[in-house]
Length: 370
Ligand code: 13P
Ligand code: SF4
Image (cartoon, rainbow, N blue to C red; front, top):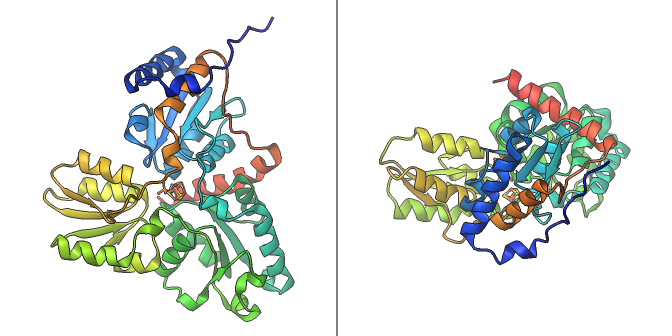
């Protein structure tokens, strides 16, 4: 006979509880669930959520963690595309929970599978696909786009492995089409000396993405017109200003920032690269960091012996990451203790199969090149 489950507890009950009560409930539920649950937290999550995470990391590290855990439930404190990747990489019996379904990513939403397939067909019609073209997608994309890349010989990358993966694919293919972050694509292409006129921009709302056939045939890199609204807030004038205000400051930015910002910064790299740079920096050094505010504030708290500034004065917060509040986490965890799986993220089998091809390719190539 199947067990009788308690009714799903509504989120509204949690919204009126004090912060202390919420934190206590999360920890009590965690103890009750034991090794049946793992809470993963992306570095951009707020402090009151990250403090409950069993494991924290950037998007690459979290995808590897999701592929390695044996926990029955993976509670993902991050955004939708990360939870989808966890479902793809996890074991069949594992269930992935995103505590707030509104935690999406505006960049990932800038490329739909219909637009990507239409672009690919247009490239085929003008003969570009007679060349060897690799479709590569940033982790920040839907499972359907990852599956498209898996099906067409391509791969997924994150900001932490874009350089080694571009290296492999630029050698083996005539050209690459990169979705959906034009800035990560352009900044990585520039690291390989690809001139700007060989990196064309594909606007999904225009015929041939707004390019001529000749431009597309000659391009080395076709960049999708997407961007991150958080990292897009950093401007070259922020770099000039902080250099005037803070002598000897080093400017360290994420490659989702625009080319003009990355070009004049001292260093650029993924979230983990930024954390490592600050960790190993000498005491007394000064840093202006161009990435998500929760991470920058945490670094400033963790390393009081270093002077850490947010590169821009206005709030550079990822509003969708912020949607995962401790209240949502408590709600999801307590429902699990009652046997209710709320906000489950499930990728369909066909999409999962091909997205797994692209994700496993990424992990295998990244680990082999370490
Ligand atoms: P990484 O975690 O790969 O640095 O990506 C940053 C990001 O935008 C996550 O959404
Ligand atoms: Fe998406 Fe930018 Fe937020 Fe990352 S920081 S989840 S790319 S909107």
